[in-house]
Length: 562
Image (cartoon, rainbow, N blue to C red; front, side, top):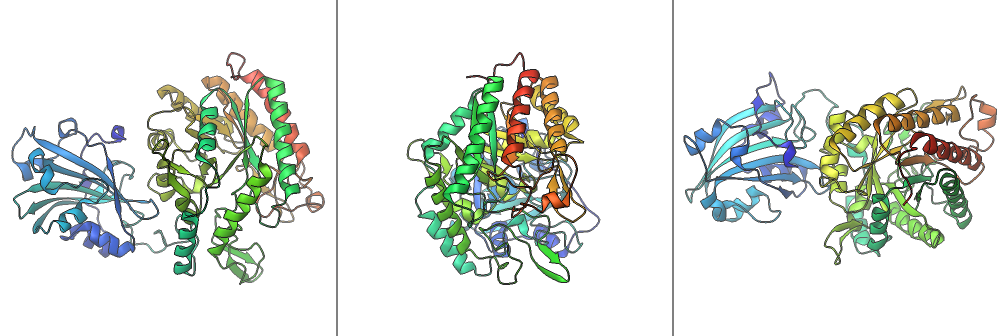
């Protein structure tokens, strides 16, 4: 993390800021108390390694507060305030004299402002600078609002505070509809009954772990070695389809694919299902329109119903408990299959209560699935989903679309796998066939240049959606194959072992993806998906054969076997 802190933050004065933001920046009371009140959420401090002030680009405010330098006795407390969901609210540097640490600097995760209030000290604040950051600071982007101020306490201690706010919460624009309240904030449902939601979270927090920690750790160990990750399953699972037959059919397809890939390439295949928890989906719009009727979008069975009715589309937090029970049932069907589970960690009211501290290694493990991923829509560095993923020890993945830059990729690596441990982090590239080679090559080059130990996987499904003349969502096998070929070519040219494939597939003979020509009549025969189109078993096995061939031709000099 310290790699992203080479200087005290500097600010430029913008031409205009919303009045609420100006009030925040000029506030002379406790920032933490004000933020907690405005956000209606307790805040906790994530304390980060404090840099030596002498290693940072100098701040002129050091002289303002501590007199002419040098200042060999100064120390820095670096912290990051997060709300109850794990979202980053602010980044802070508190510069103080070493001898004053015991008098004002808190231990643990107590925010500085709450700690000093508890001491009963009087304080005087002097604002030294306000504005927008001129460069990235920690996890917060250029243009984040912030300030610098001095606090003089009644016990004669003086500190210098540099404070930068997440622009998602302290807005920098006066335009309506651009803040976090527009649409669904962080793709979280608007639960109508907050008391019921709190009860559901408590129930989940005391429920039996769905997935034992040793199994999640075993998957991480498997992914740390040379192997090919086969990850696949439903776009969105449904409660109604969670039957022994449906689960068995998906497992049979995944096992057959793994056998073909391993047999044709010699690769050791690690099989992970999109299963036992994939009950929620982010949507590009919070509203679905049919004819002249508009209703909230279907967000997955863990939130609301697929049926286009006003009552069915109301989010119900009790569905989270149903999702837990259905996932437990699926796991009983999977017993002995040798397939790990995974899903998108989207609903924080479901995920956070199921995180526990292991008495074995002291780490925090998520027990909702063996492997969790963060989607392209929720991978903001300052958002709650990356905050959640950074705090668990499970193997995790992040979906990466064509808009991701090499710097963003490296920043995600720094937050999610700062120790560069193999098996911890997987990047799932979903570019679309037209950009698959170009964008993959750029990101793989950046990763190999700095020696990332992360795994890179191709998702050839999500960037290749099309709509038929009759308005049916589908995908063509030609586009899927082209994206796979582009990814494997980029791997070969950059010397990167192809780490795996991520697919949406069904164990049933559905007609949701087409070979080349889009035919509404054919699509209408067995189009059963509740969300996006899936491969049928025949199409899945065809791709397995293609992948085996690509592994052999792409990595002749790389050993993929254990």
